[in-house]
Image 1 (cartoon, rainbow, N blue to C red):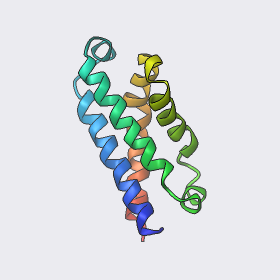
Image 2: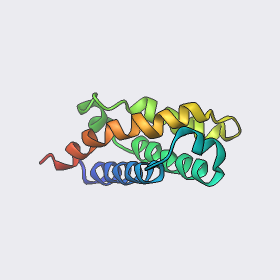
Image 3: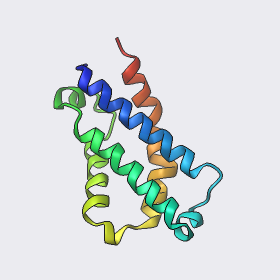
Image 4: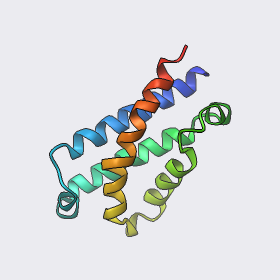
Length: 112
């Protein structure tokens, strides 16, 4: 894997860690009521997707178990449709999808 891809994947891991810290001991209703939490989650998931968009096609194609396009698509939706963010979708991404990807991403950085 090119060093630049490893760096981007580490950025994804860092952003996923932020998401996990932000929602620790939180419920979905918290993002509905807490604007700062909502903004923090949106930003962390944007970074997660932006880093994914910068991973080379070769690395993406070598690791098809990672849903690269949906990750980037989520980032694009958050950035370009910021006025219409569905908190249900944001919560699922933050509480289920991003955490589920973390072990897979960590295994990529440990590959020789």
